[in-house]
Image (tube, rainbow, N blue to C red; front, side, top):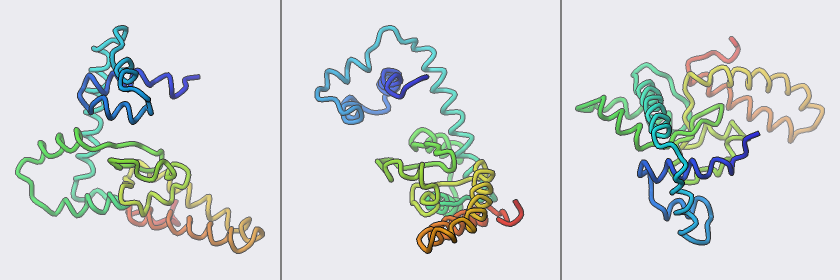
Length: 197
């Protein structure tokens, strides 16, 4: 089983090699007491630079495709960042291809499994991974058509929970109803009838 700490050297090496930030950022990211420790992580002579270049190329191609899809005029998006991007579509840009490429290079995109997190800082600190409904109102959250099946299942699951929640009391009912409403809104924003899933 691969543990997260086993990827620290890969992350640091890729980060430094492609100039995605500086050693001070890595030091803060890894919570190192010394910048020399961060330097060691970024300077592993056993790494295969060509492999990391290939990985970065694939990543950038994928990100470019995703951003291009978001900027299509008819592509429905949900979440706070989704609403901002839909507003952005109204503007005319001289070179759309260049805009997409530059945006892909600059924006941090992390999949939560049910949305994209575009936070450029700590954002929610990862709580959106566990409380997926919070991504619907977060200004860093973006939900596109890739995640429709997840939200259809969330909606169906919360409808089932309504009967169980009733036996658990008003607090449980309130939470299930809130989550059900968030899932319904996301599906509606994406052009899907929640009841037709």
